[in-house]
Amino acid sequence: MRPAAAWDRLLAMLPALLAALAYTALSVQQWRRFDFPSWDLGIFSSLASAYARGSAPIVPIKGDDFNLLGDHFHPILVLLGPVWALFPSPLTLMVLQALLLAASAVPLTRLAIDRLGRTIGLMAGFVYVFSFGLQSAHIVQFHEIAFAVPLLALSLTAYLRHRMMTAAIWAGLLVFVKEDLGLTVTVLGLIIAVRALMDARELQERSAEAGRRATTVKQLALSFGSDADIAARRDFTIGAGLTLWGVFWFLLSTLLILPALNPQGQFDYTDNIGSALDVFGPPIKWATVGLLILATGVVGLRSPLVLLALPTLAWRMTGNVEHYWGWTWHYSAVLMPIAFAALLDALPKIARFADRLRSSSPAWAHRIPRWVLQPRAAAFPLGLAALATVITGAAGPTMPVLQLAEPDRWSVSEQAQQAREAMAALPPGTQVASDISTLAPLTVDHQVQWLHGPNQRAPYCALVDQWVLNQSPAQQQVWLEDRWNTVFEQRFSNDRYSVWCQQSAPQGWERPAPASRPQSDR
Image (cartoon, rainbow, N blue to C red; front, side, top):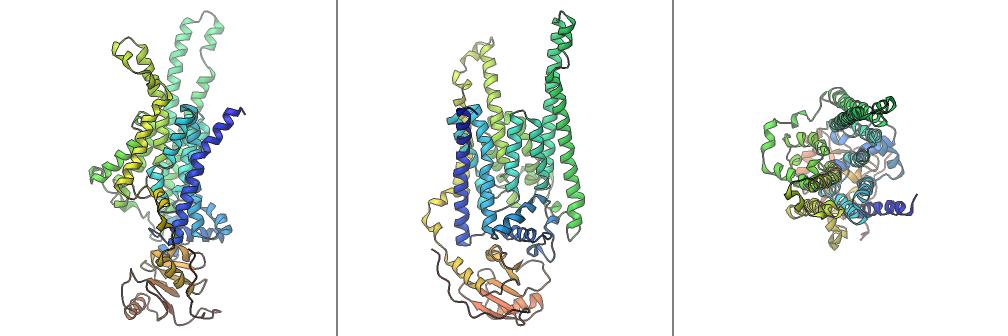
């Protein structure tokens, strides 16, 4: 390997390395403060724990005996099992997501350096890895799309390097991340196939011209059946196969697998999709689309790769769930490698188009400045892509990396200390019902269900967040006993949490002494 190429490889890792450190630090901040924005981390931690035991992903947080493969189709998450077995903590999943999101920047940054030069290419890598879609995804903690982001980055980089088989292999794995990504795979297959057809047509025109100019039989033979023609046929086959693969797994997962494993015998998210007319409002949908256009540097709209965003945007913008419409959750993460790859695809095309115009006869074409033809011209669309992140940071809490500079974020909150006190009063290995603020950390050594979920099976203990169930102790006891038709007694209480357990202890368990206040880990 040439020294310059080796240096470029190292440079391409710089944005990923800094992002991995920043996103991991954010995870540690949240973990120390017990800052859990939803129940999702608890759900995926329960899944990882089940896979680590070699069992089906039964997640009581979603309901009694609920198989999470009946919620979304994400068999790739079986890879979490060995990781959890080595490091059994929800923080492990948060750090893993930080590494996966950061790693997606490596192939894209390397491509940007190859096309735009080291300075602009490196800048492009930072714009991508700290884009609003990746930041907002990481701050809401682990989701299965953490695997989709690097797979998309690897696939689209291979596509832009004209390595269609490699692109198809990486993209093909997306069907095992989430059921709707089968449609994204289908669109990429169509793009590859159409591109191959266009290449074949261009080759035919060139061959016909070469045939007319041929003066010997040998020259005439060489004008047909070239290596390029064979490559175009091969790429068409790859694209067609990838299209069928995506359609097959989308239909299989949504029509057969998910209903078969779902307790209700259905795909739960069908009712979340509204009509096509719903895409026209409310205005936040248009704002999200506008931000995505900015993320492509606007010039990325010139690339067919932007079509890959349509399946995700379709179910989001026709959905009746408000979280789908905006930019503050994880739903835009898979769109970031698409937007960035489209930008990298479009920049050379625009430069070539400008060059052709300058070489043409119209007088106005010669007024196009020469800097448009240079790699540094990419700084402007990259600035637009960065602007999308700045706008989201100004409009809402979607620039989480700035939290790293806030001293208060590094301190252990009073809520976290009180939660740890309450958790210490729980017998290990028992079934516990809790609120969202303690679901995830309880998964390490408990079977956990949501206190307000559909479960009919009574937990042995309930850890009540008194900010959620704002009642007196007597009222809490009545609520719990009516909820599960079981007698509970209070075992622990502080300003924020109370622990209630059934009167009869689990077999082989001895009631512990009252928990003492733990030392602060400030």
